[in-house]
Image (tube, rainbow, N blue to C red; front, side, top):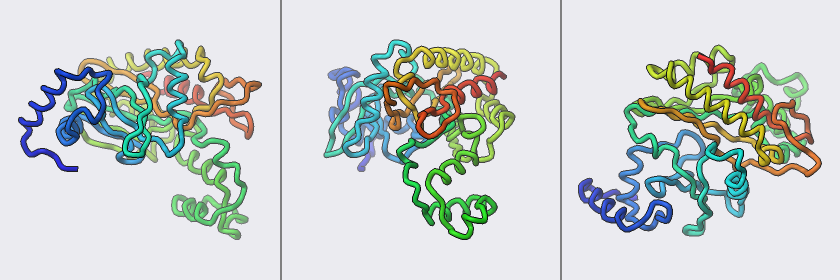
Length: 315
């Protein structure tokens, strides 16, 4: 995409446009994209997920690309917005959007309230002890490609039978991957972080124990460790209470979701994000998000992970 060379010209275009268009109604097409993105991308980052699937839309919102003919996340956000127990615990959801034959949802950009990139830090924590939907591992056929992936990570992992067949099921592979991180043991794992000044960190494979997590959080919070840790602990406890009282969580398995932690020199916060794998369970099932998963019970370990995150973040 072409970017304008003249920053001053960009600033003037943005200033004039913002005088005419309100934040809540402004569409991404309301401004010249080169100007808009040039200014927004200076202070914005996508920590995880496929690159380019999330883009700034206005100075307070972003667009998140949705798979073709897939409305799972949009429907999840619609239900969350109606769940009073979860008010303020997730980004605000605005609407679904069709643009150039592609689908997006428009949601609140949480980074907009933390514009100072020199002092701002962000961490994405994948929450839950199960990171896959039951439907994703229903196929019991064995695959050689997954066996190869497992061996590339740990040559000593396969059993003698698996070595002979050189193939494993997707369930076997996914559970192996969860044990390789802290997802299986703690119910969460650190996915990525951006430190003050913009330095990105995406390698947290060795962060597996509570002590590892504690040390990583201390390093992440840096000079703000004393104040921010207390603020974040309180926020996570409020989040836990909200989930325990939530009608949405009682009736939905929430897989692949994250808790996004943000802080700067003045404040800190945490929000639940990513609901693309949120599935309503049968009416006769009520989830508590702490029970161990068995095929058919739909438990995801969300609260189990949040309990442990609160425990290890007591700094």
